[in-house]
Length: 276
Ligand SMILES: O=C(O)CCC(=O)C(=O)O
Image 1 (tube, rainbow, N blue to C red):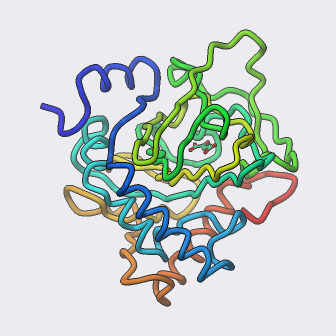
Image 2: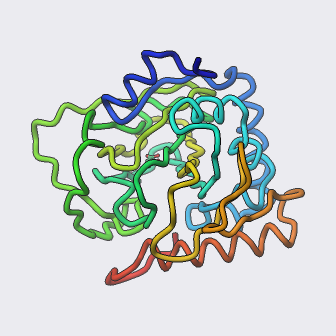
């Protein structure tokens, strides 16, 4: 018996490569988390900004709590099983009127995680609508192999390499509209994108990328993970601790280390490296 998802949601994940919307918490609870995140942004602007968006769960208790949220983990367990580790997190925040966009891509392309059995959770802490640049998915594309990606390094493309797949004109994309406190789950190979934020409010996505079952390995570098649920972290990974508070020295050191490892993995053989 599933812990959080309905049978129909589990089936839609298998068929489409994503599942949305999933209720995680009330809108009021999401607004509290948003307030805590925005307080942390105001207090530590050098550690939380568009260039410092990776693995904030290692240094900020609000993101740590989200990454370990029992409802999110229940839903993830319904798809990948009871032994779960956290590979990383990314804050995808688009400011009001932000031209930042995400081109069509498959997450699995550069991450080195094999096999592609992990899952990404995208939690909204503000309304994520078509106007504010929600994610769009091409259903069923998780059943494809990895498509050719072209590195564009386009200025407003907020993906590391600005990597893009040419999907043609007649694709039938599904927009994942979420209220604060809802999330989507997606497969590492599903093709997805998002448009600029044309609204007058922030679009805040806290993304756990990815939750992994134990048999998934990092093949391009050190596999640094955090225990989330189930049996102990397997020995092919290096285990990272949860932070004891905001910006404490151990958390800062682990975050710097894993972000360096990520940079080498994500920019492998790239012509240039960006700051995120
Ligand atoms: O938040 C976005 O607009 C894109 C996020 C994304 O590509 C992802 O979570 O894999």
